[in-house]
Amino acid sequence: MNKGKNKTLQQKEQFTENCRYLGLKVLAEQYQQMVDKANSDNNMGYFEFIQAIIQTESAAKKQRQIEYLISGSKLPQPLKLLGDFDFDFQPNLDRRLIMDLASLQFLEKNQSILLTSTNNGVGKSHIARSLALLACQNGHKTLYTTCSDLILDLNQGVFEKTLEKRMKKYTNPELLVVDEMGNDRLELQIVKEAHLLFKVIDQRYNDNKSLIFTTNVEEADWAEFLGDPITTSAILDRIYHNSVIIRIKGESYRRFQSEQLQKEYGVQNNEGKPEQ
Image 1 (cartoon, one colour):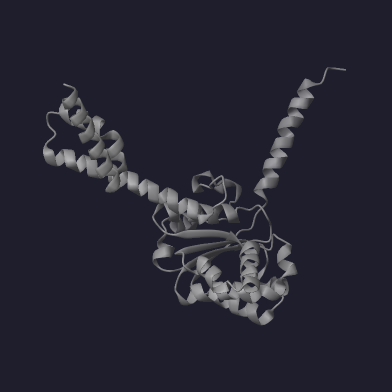
Image 2: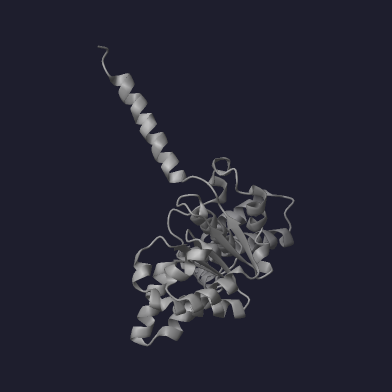
């Protein structure tokens, strides 16, 4: 009796070990439930049983890949969903255009996106990060960075003589998001390094790889902001070519939320005051 139990236990251990070796992680953990389900279903044949296992493993592998791509993208937490964007607050923004971009055809066509406005808080970053998340969920290698972090990183690469290695981090992904040009005053302290930004954009342009770029610096002010008119002209030329340009004209949603919060507490405070 004990020999039989030990043999069965060894078989199960060998089975799960083989499953893990083959990368069948779900089957290794849930094979008994799968067998029980097959036994309870009189209509399930051998092919249907194997097919169900393969489909379950395939779905699990796809989910692991998505989680890996999202983690590697360096997208800030919490993740931004396009469904959470308040289009009613920005009536001048073409919702149909954003939904078209959400289909990710711009990636298939090797096109880029430029989101620009003169105000902060209008939703540029939300849209950019949402599209990047969709790209990850559809199996595209993606990287998110702010403009200032990118320049600082490459500038450090020049100092450490690791520029080429660092460049690959920004040129290899299918989609690169360069967010918030103009929001960090640190950029103004390293304007002479604008050529580093050009190197990334030029390489991706030559490789026909998509870019999402957000800024609140008007086109006419780019040269002054980056401090190098010639390099700036080259950057603009590559960004604007084959890009969908979205100019958002509206108020700050963050300010709107702040005002709503003040009103909410103001009403509560007024209601809580004793009558005079």
